[in-house]
Image (cartoon, rainbow, N blue to C red; front, top):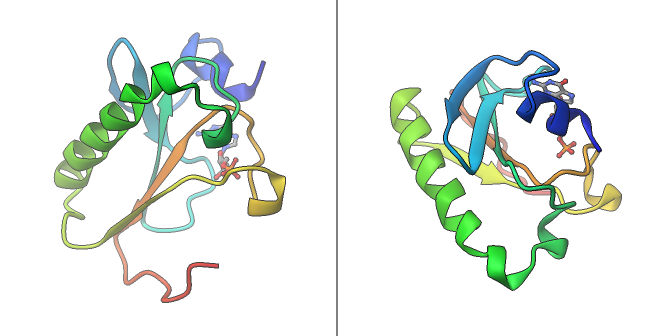
Length: 111
Ligand code: 5GP
């Protein structure tokens, strides 16, 4: 059980920007760019490495939502979609999620 599960269940408020039956997206509470959204499959999956093959279609859903939100937030020309897998990569919430970042020139480095 994570804070994202509570958000999905409506027990903790969020600034929601998208929701359908399998995915929710909301603004990150501590934004690292002018646009910083979190795209979260609702199913409780710890991270990318734990994603079972039968749930791979969720990744396509996430990408579709990212495309739509990039358009809506007018960052189509430059954004980053990323996931931190594991604490060594900076994962702090162990419920699979993707950061959609944009709205300024993003740093050149990836790591
Ligand atoms: P991670 O570090 O696991 O890749 O990303 C977790 C993200 O969730 C962080 O960017 C953090 O700011 C965000 N976050 C943590 N708790 C909350 C919360 O309660 N609400 C929202 N909207 N974002 C959160």
